[in-house]
Length: 166
Image (cartoon, rainbow, N blue to C red):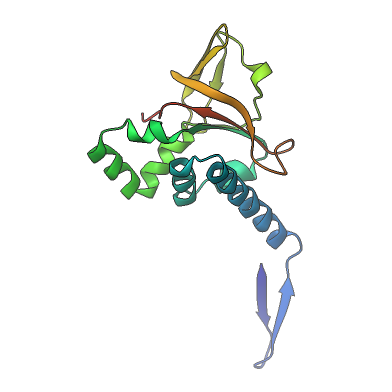
């Protein structure tokens, strides 16, 4: 962040505030890295949704888990309802917050009967039946997909087959 201060007269001095630009860049890098990872996995709809929402407060907080809806999850929603949703970035953000947990939860930590709090405040129940795992009523189709170079320290992605709309 660049701060300007002026004294008596017309001279302006610039002072850098250490660390602020670097922190903003780090958050932007994590969001961009998540979007790139989603695109690389063929999750174009989820990548577009993340790009349109403001999720910086969540990724800025540290570790996170993203339940990334696959493209079929978006196509399963009524076309008019989906168009209304995608036209409103605030609504997209509210839905995505249902898909984000403010800690890195790997597959080994998913236990039947457990509950996790989504960034929206909604409680997501975990059901494990053999190899089938559901979180918040949606099925995990692929677990522990990394978000890129910072995955070990920042985030975990599980691909899911549905959207948590409410």
